Length: 252
Image 1: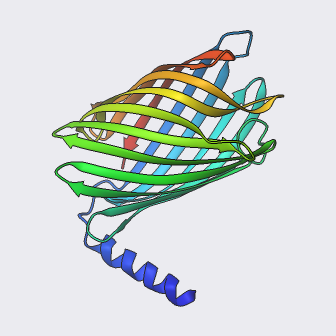
Image 2: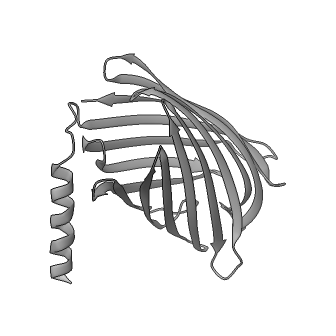
């Protein structure tokens, strides 16, 4: 096992050393989120902080923290992860998060995915995530196909999820993004299907979902941008959630 880990680490180190270095490798983000719910539910609030070290355009090691208030219950969560290059094109993404409060958020979450360019602007990504809530576990797997055309990206994301002991539920997303520079972009996402939601005191529920969101970033000064998102998600007959996110991003 130790020999395998040494070989794994050596392969990553050699690959990373060959990448083009970034002038400003640190990326800091701060966000505040307000979400309005109907059907008598209290509004949601969230603050989020993210710091990443990105020495090149295919490598990132990051940590995050968020504090949330959902359904009148407060949670906090810390997370960490990495994007690691392997070979000349493949990128592996691993991530984990832990909540010491886990009233609504998962107690812990583990994620892994692999992105493989196919040539001519096509990228295929597959991955999975396991989340452990106080009321049960949820597993998800997905496949995503993307096409890059100049400054534009178009994608289709297919995912199946299930709470422990139940059947799989499918969901689909269509993504269109315009990205003329690192700190300026706009992304439109449309989603439909069945997804798992943790709704106290009922616990894990599978509901029909229809959602749309527009998020983006605009560079206001060199290395500094204003970020934001507006969106709406209809969780079956439970509620409709309207999202407003404002934040900032700084490279250094």
